[in-house]
Every structure is written in C-alpha cells, then in structure tokens.
Image 1 (cartoon, helix red, strand yellow):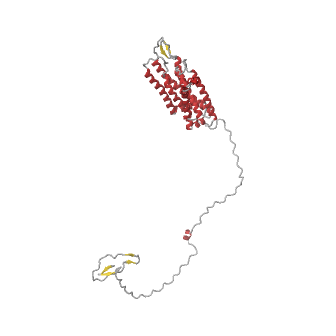
Image 2 (cartoon, one colour):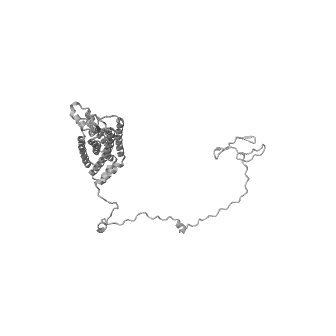
Image 3 (tube, helix red, strand yellow):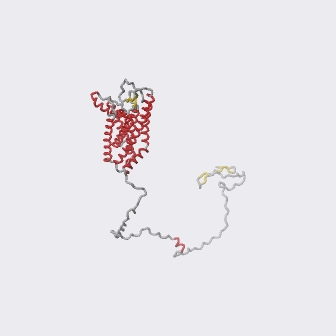
Length: 393
C-alpha cells in the first residue's frame, strides 16, 4: 500500500518473478494534479498501433554441402595415432642344459716373492706383544690412577699423621718402622679393587671378546695380565712403604734405651738407641709390597673365575677381613682353631712383616704368612687358567 497523488494505492508491491517484496522506486514525487508518470507501479502506457507490415517471404531451403569421403591432410594429422605395443617379444627357447662352458685358463705359476706384500711389517705374535698390550691398558684407564692414588694417599697420609702426633713421645716399646702398618691396612683394599677390575672390567664392557680375538691364546692373555698387574702393584706398594719407613726411622729412630731394661719384642737396639734392623727394613719395604701384590693377584684370579666386578671385590673383602673378625668371637673350646685363623689372616700377615704380630710372643717376621698366601694365590691362579680355557666368553 502506498500513497499516489493523494490517493491510496492498495496494489501489492510483491514482484511475482522474484517472490520478494520490492521497495517503491526512489525519486521525486509528482506534484498534486500532475499526470501520472509511467513506472513499475503506475498505469501502463498505451502502446501505439504498428503500421501495416508486409508479409515476409519464406527463406529458400539451404541444402548442406556433401560430406567429403576422403580425409584432408589436416584431418589425418589430427587422427589418433596407434600406440606401440608394450608386450615383450617372446624369448627364444633355450636348451635346458645350456651350452658347454669354457674351462678357465690355468693360472700361471708365480715366482716366489712376486705376490701381494703388505706395507705393514707382519710379525708373528709373541708373549712380549701381549705384555705390551696389557701395559697399555693398565696405564691408560682411569681406574688404575684412582685406585693407586687412593692407596698412596692412605699409606703416606696416615703415616704422616701418626708421626705428627707421636713425634715428641719417647716410646721404645714398638719397632721403629711399625707406624707404617696402619695406613697399609687400609691401602691394601685399593690394590684388591684394582686387581679385580683388571679383568672384570673387560667382561663388563665386552672388551674381552676383542682381546681374545686379537690374541686367541687365552693362557697368554691371562698370564700377561697377571705379570703386568703384579709388577705395577709390587713397585707402587714398595715405593710407598719405603717412603714411610724412611720417615718413621727419622722420627722414631735414635731413642735412648735404659741399659737395665729388656727391650720389647721386635725392637732393635744398637749402641743404646732404637734402630731398625736389616730384617725390619726388608719386611717393611719389599716384604709388605710382595704380600699386597699377592693379595691383588688373588683378587685378579677371583675376578677371572666370577667375571663380575662387585662379586669379586666383595669376595676378596670377606677373605681379608672375615677370618680375623670371626676368630675374635669363637669360644675358648676352639682355641687352637682360633689362633690359626688369627695367625694366617691378612692383617696379622702384614703386622708380622713389621715385627708386631697380633698373636704370639716370639719374634715373627711374616715368612710363614707370606708362603701361605703365595700357595693360595697359585691355586687360585691355576683355577682361573683352567676355567678361562674351558668356558666360553
């Protein structure tokens, strides 16, 4: 509905073509009284009558041109070309037995020395090569430096502390070189650990396979390990104990002894003053070095048998410490067995080499304990050789 010329137009503004309500055309409104203009919603204009039009004559029939029967060159080029066949040609039939093969020509005999020669000199493997290999291993791994360093620190450090504490005390009841024992009782544990790690570390990392592949003779490998470790531990321990012996002799030697008193067991007196005898020097240097090196060699044998680092170290700690501890708790009815365990224990073996045995009043020099340890180590080493040759890696 809209207002047109003052009158209301009720015609709908819905466009029948779009079915949408269209708004009224915008523009100026016509003034009142003016004739209505044609528009989309106004009255349609009256069309003019057309003039008389003459009839149009029919168009003549057009006949299509005949279709050419032959193709032109352009049509031939546009035609689809046949694709080549992808099938493989049939293979010719072969004889199942095949043609007779020609025999290779006979090789010409080469004169001696005319074959391949390596630029690297090839020499047969010897025991010296195994020794050099094991020396390279033991001096390049960190475990050697750590264990031997801890051993030196304990042996020398504890001895220096004892010397500093007892330097002003005039005690003539103990041998001059005896204070070096206390540091060595703890330092030997580091040597045991190194002896076990020399071979168990190769089993842990798998390096033992490379070692035995390079040197198939297993007895040669174990012998080289035992010799190199024994020499390293013996020399290191002997040098450390020799240093402590020199310090103890300078600190506690030369103490005056009352002529009317009998010197204590193991104390050497020379010209009225305390001094270290030749046996004490030998036992406090080379003797304890040999004893500790044999303990380390025993740990190497146990490590070769167990092939496990923690197991070998724990076994050796028990073998060194348990006999003395167990003997202290045995009843008096087992007195003979108790004395034997104390006498041949590792701490008493070291103490006897310093001429301060834990049991017995006689002047022991540690020879029996050293021989016993050497026999036990030899048995364990033979067992390790037998097991290494019999078992698989």
